[in-house]
Image (cartoon, rainbow, N blue to C red; front, side, top):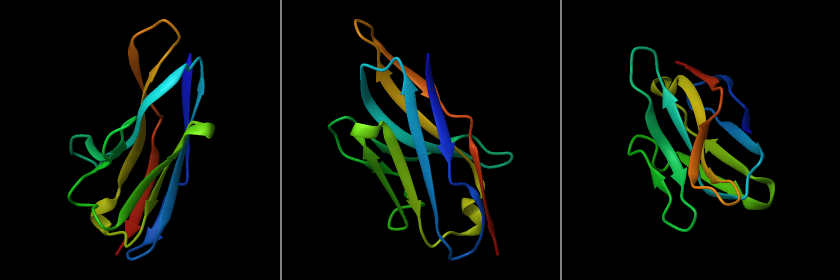
Length: 120
């Protein structure tokens, strides 16, 4: 079983910063991609940023230049540094990981979500 534990959400004023963390643990042989999605009330879940195993980091246009995703492979951890936050960034943020167990195909798992609220 693979588990994701997120932390770092909270309430912040517009223009402020937050840093989200997500640690993956369990029966993981290798991790292919780590990323963050978000879902605001009444909206569909959308990609925020993702770091593939060996490819190019992708960001949603709405967060480019403000958010930075990074990963620590030794710790199976992904971070999302969020600067210059706007009220429209308010959402539940979900960690997402694509991994592989030994002798198995790729699987994915979602975190439980962490609330980010940006006040104007």
